Image (cartoon, rainbow, N blue to C red; front, side, top):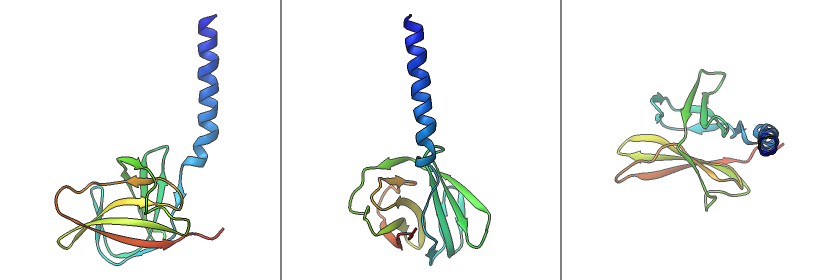
Length: 136
């Protein structure tokens, strides 16, 4: 009897997870003009237009150079509770700057928790790209 109850609970939770997962994955940020070369994961990207797509289920950020460029996939470290970066009007893409080098650090979507992609140790500056919220 106990195993049946546990199996029923397991199936119910799995069903809920399958229903919720599409809503948690692949949120797109508007195309953003990144005016400098930057690093994301192990790859260096030239300045240009990019789309950043967060996939919470896979715990990666897909970085695609526009138009239809090859995509890079960067695992993210964790999510961060919504703070001043999270607004109702625009997305924020945050880069850590050390000297002349920029590294993708955080992604914030309107009203959502942030995504921490990279944490720079030591002295650095934050450079924030504001991207208007996509109108649907």
